Image (cartoon, rainbow over all chains, first blue to last red; front, side, top):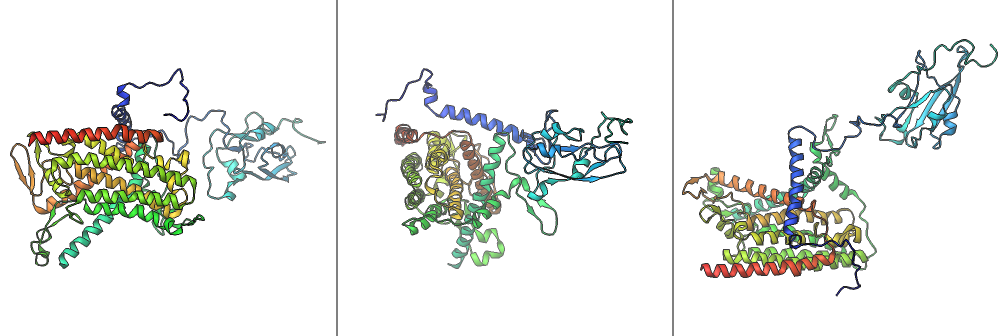
Length: 190
Length: 378
């Protein structure tokens, strides 16, 4: 009767009369799903959460890995200025070409005369590879594990500038003394 | 005569409102119930913002049905290059209308005496009494099957006129499946009709307010538990929902017979499916679960098995019956959704084999046993 000979497998499932009668196994399945439904409903109506879901933009999971590459931050000097020296290495290494830096010149700070006027990251294209962090010679850009607030309603709003990168979750670089010790870190004739 | 017109217009308005509400609310129930059953939250992002304020009403995602309807209304009404444009345009309505018409013969309440319910209207209505049912037809259950059978025509029309192979295959599947299962549905009900001796749905409900073996309410589900199970399975198959959704099997046929439909035309198919859940629930309630009555309850009040009688006022009876009917329908609809989110889909040959080699003999056996028992009892 079959249109073609069906292959018989060594682990062909066999059904006894219990399974063949459909009804009992169906009732067992319905029992399982109803128990789950009632248990979760009981949690919901008593004010607890009956689901494993995290409401993402409003809630963030606490168990992000410490090494998770989340959102970028710019580290700060003790006076609150960015540690970045606008060398453009992160922008150069970035595979998605999402970093844009405009450099400024500050003759008053002899140790770091070059500083970023504008430092923007386009999060709509960022691939979170972390190469910018590796490329940075000054430890000026880091990635922290949390990523709250990234979803936006408009593509243009996905560009985050220095304000956001400096003020959200600010970190300062404690590894380097400031002001830098005499002689070291200075370039060119004094 | 004008009184009849007023009452029946109110009935029709009530029935339409109930069906439309069920069609919309069941989409929400389906989403939320499925979510809760699988440890999820479910749709909860659509909101209605009160104008000129920032107050957003979410209401547990109740507005997602509204958003769906709006989306379907404003979507492009794409038309395939079909040679039978008229059949293509009319097919959703052929599916949708009979589903609504079936409700005309289903009683959603007992006897309504408007003059007694609203004493201020007693002068207008006199002592006229109306059963809460749009059309009290002697043929009751036969009308249900006659209109139920018409949806097959709609599905076949849709599949045939779409000029698409997937639609055609879906329509063929829908046709063979629905015809097979309609037969089983009718056979299972036949046993019940033997016991009740009538096809009038109101009379069937009234007979169920009696008592069985001295303590059980004389519900159809206690008289014919086997038929109730078979009827439920056949009705779900008739509605083409999982585990019997072969005509629309996404992995094989895209969307089956309504692959080529878009916007509100497709919405009508979906809406008809959800209303049919409520219709099946209403039918099951009427035939097997004592209809609009609570156990031991009749049009006059409760008559408990111990001989204790609790009379109720007419207003209390009417309100109880309306609420009980809606509650039972919602419960059975929810049960159907539970089935839909529990069981996997059949294979196509299994569906027809299940119908003809498994359920058909069982339904026949049930009928024969019922007939013999009814004959012996008489």
